[in-house]
Length: 124
Length: 107
Image (cartoon, rainbow over all chains, first blue to last red; front, side, top):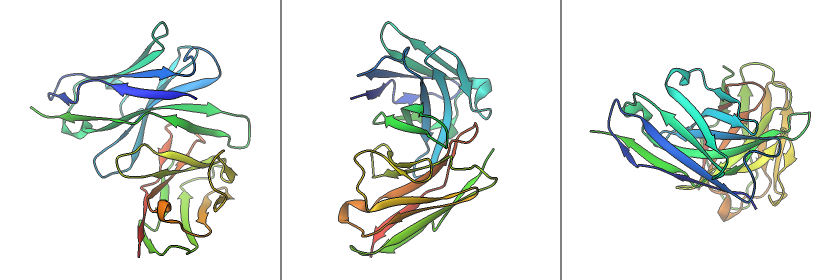
């Protein structure tokens, strides 16, 4: 059973960098045909996809965040990380890490495992 | 970006009711739609993928249909544990986008 767990500071000051780590157990982030994603949810709002790192190490970011975003990985620890720079109050959200699988044709492309979420508040 | 528009935004229903939530994409996305259930303070849970395929372990009262731009999630007989918020999501192209959610409440 794959499990994901987010960790990181719950409070970040404006203009600083938000950093979160997702620790994966039950499967390797560097094997299998999986995409390791970050998704966020503003308080009381819907879900916003942030970006992913592929098992090969390649990345893809939401263009709306691309200029401030870095997703990286540490395969020795089976972790992947998010860094979002120059944060403002608009970045206050619950941040989820999630695994995405492409399981063939016909639309078989979905987020099947999620972490429990980590609330990050941007405030001075 | 592909916009996903869900309706209704909220819905009141009773245990045993049949309910349907719809999702419309701003362009044709074949069957690249997934449905998630989210309960308060919890992560979303995958219910349906590829528009109509039930995720393993999900009760058969949940079903999905649609193709192209119009999709629906149906719960055939509401159970108390089904009161939650439901989201559609397109996986046709990046950036992946979600609907705004439908909150299903007890009448």
